[in-house]
Length: 108
Image (cartoon, rainbow, N blue to C red; front, side, top):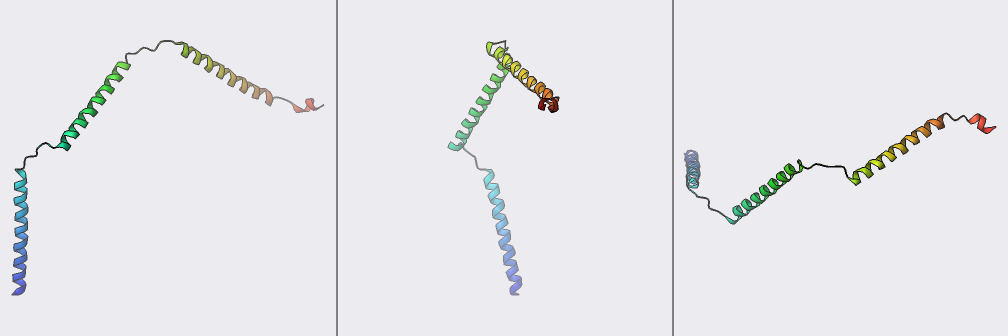
């Protein structure tokens, strides 16, 4: 019948498509990828990134050996910090003194 013939033709077409797909996959296995400008550029970029990271690692490693000694700037900071702490402490004490203030005798 016509319907059977049409189904056979459809099946044959599907079979042919699948065969060409298989053949294409086989042919693509033989393809040799050569160097391109893009791959070379990406390689160079990767090398640069790796070199940058390595110098960063080296710098961090060398900074571990650095001794920080007492400096004038450090002493000034300590003095300023101490003055600030003292100022805050006097403010706290002043608040405590103000809470004990009795308004009654001051008015008379």
